[in-house]
Length: 128
Image 1: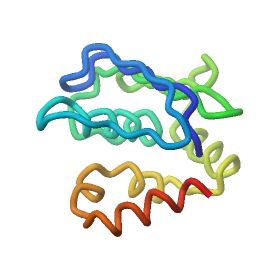
Image 2: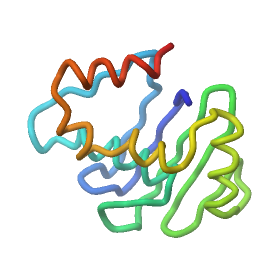
Image 3: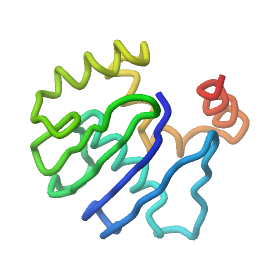
């Protein structure tokens, strides 16, 4: 799964944030500037799991695919309200990656706990 566009509104410290990731995108900054919040917002859009309040408005456009938009408890794909189960099936069919794997991949706490060499190896595995 490759992100083509990410839009975040009202998620933790991110009142408004947009980006078009490249093949490899690095978020860098001082402690407390919201780097982890970006990853958590992607997780929220895809899985519905949030470590924060759920008043966020997050859209994730998948490369060559569809846009998942989550606002509060509502999730839409291509502008049509749907269920989390439908999102899960769409992701599994389109990427071969299951919802549980998505939760692991987008876990900021898990990634933060990895040593640099293992993190590099893990992230690089998604580029091939």
